Amino acid sequence: MTAHDTPLSADMTITAQALTEFCDDYLSASAFKDYAPNGLQVDGGRPIRRIVTGVTACEALIDAAIAEDADAIMVHHGYFWKGEPMTITGMKGQRIRKLMQHGISLIGYHLPLDAHPKIGNNAKLAEMLGLTITEALYPHESHPVGNIATCPPQSAESLTQTITQALGRIPLHISGHYQYLADADTAVPKLLKRIGICTGGAQDMIEQAAAMGCDAYISGEISERTTHSARELGIDYFACGHHATERAGIQALGDIIAQQFGLSVRFIDIDNPA
Image 1 (spheres, rainbow, N blue to C red):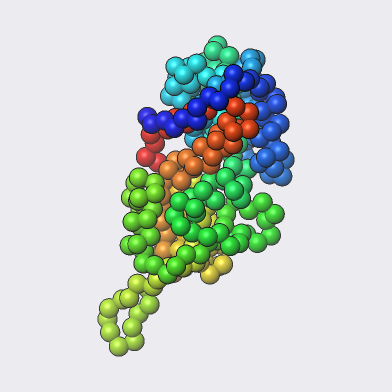
Image 2: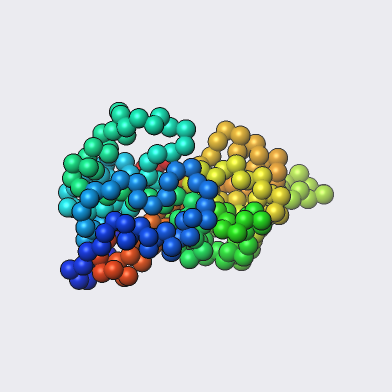
C-alpha cells in the first residue's frame, strides 16, 4: 500500500452534499449515462475534514480510511453497479456496514472521471506517456470516454518502455502492425504515431481505434479475443492494467478538492495487478 498526501492547509470542513455538488459540476456528471450512480453513494452523516482517495472502494481501502480517521472516501469504482444484486448483504453489506459504523461517506465518479479533459484518467495517462490528445475515439460523443492522441513516431519497444516507467509495470504488448518487404521474408515493425487510448476495461474499443486509423491502442485489460482482433485489424495493443491506468484521475480530483476547500486529502493505493 502506498500513499500520496495533500497536506491540511486549514481547519476547514464541508458537508458531503456540498462536496458532491462541487464535484458533480466540475466533472459534468449529469452529462453521462453510467453503469453506477455518480456522486454521494453512502452518507456518513458528519462534516468532512479529512478525505481518503483511491481507485476502488474495497474493504482494504475502507480499513485504511478508518485508520486515517477519514470522514469520506472518494473513488473511481464505487458501489451499486447495474446488474448486481440490490440487497446489501455479503461482501457489499460488510463494506457498507463499516462505512456507516464509522460515519464515513462514500463518493464515487466513474465515466465522468474517465472523460474529464483536464484531470480525467485518459487525459492524465496521455500526459504521463507524452501523448497529445487530438480528438475523440468516437467523434459523435460530446464528453468522450475514449480519445485519440499523437506522438513522435516511435517503435512499440519505445512505447513499452515509456509505459513501464510511467505506471511501474510492464504492459502486455500484442503486435499487430507489420509492413512486409516485397523482396524479403523479414518483417519491419511500423512506427507508432497515432494512438487510441481508453483506460480500464475498454479493450473492445480496439475495433473503433482501428477504424479511426490508429497505429496502436492502449487500455487496461485484455480478453482472449483481443489478441486476435489486434492481429487481424493490424493494430498494436497495449494492456497496461485496469487499476494502473486509473490511478491518476482520482488523485488529480483529490488535489483539486484540497486546493479548493483546504481539506486534508490522502491518496492510498491498494495494490492490484489486474
